[in-house]
Amino acid sequence: MTEMPLEAAPPARKSQAAEVRTMPGWLASWLLVSPLALVLAAFLLIPIAVIFIVSFWGYNEWSFFPDFTFENYEYLLTSSVTWATYLNTLKYVALSWAFTAAIGFTVAYFLAFHIRSTVWQVALFLLCTIPFWTSNIIRMISWVPFLGRNGLANQFLQGIGVIDEPLEFLLFSDFAVVLAFVHLYTLFMVVPIFNSMMRIDRSLIEAARDQGASGFQILTNVILPLSKPGLMIGSIFVVTLVMGDFITVRFMSGSQSASVGRIIQNEIALLQYPAAAASAVVLLITVLIMIAVMLRLVDIRKEL
Image 1 (tube, rainbow, N blue to C red):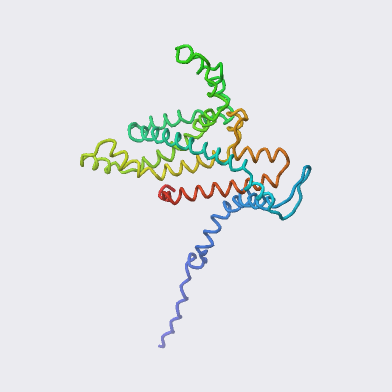
Image 2: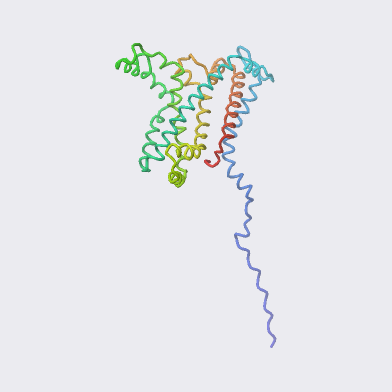
């Protein structure tokens, strides 16, 4: 009796997962970042490109028109008013940065190393954010009844006999402008510095104490160097905001001081859009150079 030949077994089906073609990694990455890239292109890159193009246009007393001229940049960069305004703005930046850095570092140090309870840390952070529940303009206006000639500060100082006449420099002065900047932007220093301090390994501080280091030595040789990335991130925020501000300078100085933002605002009000665009381009380049210098001084990638 002859045996029937066995039929060859059908080839095993490929698993469904193997049949599905996997998407290349580079394509998946581009698809993931494409929504954010489109948003940045629509609301950042394209407007900057338009401003750059308009900065080369011409204008007269009643209109502006397409052109290709360097007159806007030539007038801007050769005007003594421009240089004086930039120096005044850089003065505001330096003073605001110094005070916000000092206050921000102190507050962050207190929260990170002296407040052990997470609940209390969160509560104190919320307390610091209370002024941010309102707009910048409201916070600026709140200084007027306090710093004015007949304000609370002058009345208090006169009441205790410290001064005989009201202090005129408290309001509508450079002092008032810097005070408002510090009030508005100190929290932008507190948060990144606090984040850097919370990442410091506490064993480093204990090792420094075991080696006989004093509290001041620990602060200057351990805590401060390890907090530099957070300090630099806060500095970028403060420098950028102060350089582009125009409302605070106008209101708190009583229109007696100028800033780069005020120049752009005045040019827009006079319908000198090409000149305003040129001023904006120069301001953008200046801020980018300042940020590049700060990034060269401290590596902030560990904080990102």
